[in-house]
Each structure stands twice: as structure tokens, then as C-alpha cells.
Amino acid sequence: LLEAIEELDTVYVPIGMGSGICGLIQARDLLGLNTDIVGVVSEHADAFAQSVEQGRVVCTDTAHTFADGLACRQPLPEALEIIAKGAARVIRVSDREISHAIRLYHETTHNTAEGAGAAALAGLIKEQSQQQGRRVAVILSGANIDRRLYASILDEDMSPLSA
Image (spheres, rainbow, N blue to C red):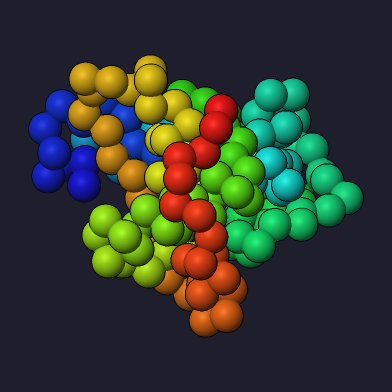
């Protein structure tokens, strides 16, 4: 991705335990690029966001999100160190915003995305006004979603989310 798209301004990537975003940060740095990397977590599982904000590992009591790939309660210190130094920011998205992104993937690209897989797109949608005119990418990291849950998400209203 980083080599395929010249002058990529920003990449949005979901954060579960941190391996994906850490690998992307390391690859960007090894390639000598200036691409901003934005981590995306669930607002219901925001241990990494809290940890980056507070500059230390913060553990949460719960991580209740249907996006189970984002359900981290205790960040790994090694991953936190890389993310805190290398990510432009870590943002939170709601389950509703993730559901909207799942529907958009289905309707516009015919791809199946699990909750964690669609989180990056939800993050971009949340920040779309500040990304206007920029070269931006999202990481679609998985399609392992329960059939019934997927069907119920697809049945929801496709109208745009309000801010």
C-alpha cells in the first residue's frame, strides 16, 4: 500500500492488540515516508486511545463492542510505545458508525467487512472534512462476521449518520 500509492497523506488502521498499526508504522518509517497513520478504536474499547492520551498503559474494565477484533482492555506496552511515537492520532468510533461502514462496504464495493475490518472506514468518515483533497487509504482487515449479525446490520437504514 505504502509503495503502491505515491504521496499517500493518511492511512486509517484499526487497532486491536496493535500488531497491524505497528507493522504499518514500521514499514512507513523504513520507507522514509511522511504518511500520517491514524489508529481507530471502538469508543466502547478505547484502552489504546486512553493510553496514548495519558502516556501510559491504561486498562479498562470492559470492552463491549460487537467489533470483537477491537475489544482490547489492556494494551501491550511494546505496541503502545510504537503507536504513541508513530501514529498521528488514535480516534474513537461508535458501533453505529462501524455498522454504517460495514453497509457502505457491502453496497459500494460488494466486500464483506467485520466490525474491526470496517473501523478504519468509519474513522475516515468521521474525519472526512479534514481529509478533503488529500490522498487517503483505509485498511480493511477482516471479513469474519457472524451471518445473522451481518444480515441485521445490512437491514438497517442506509441514510448517512448524523455527526
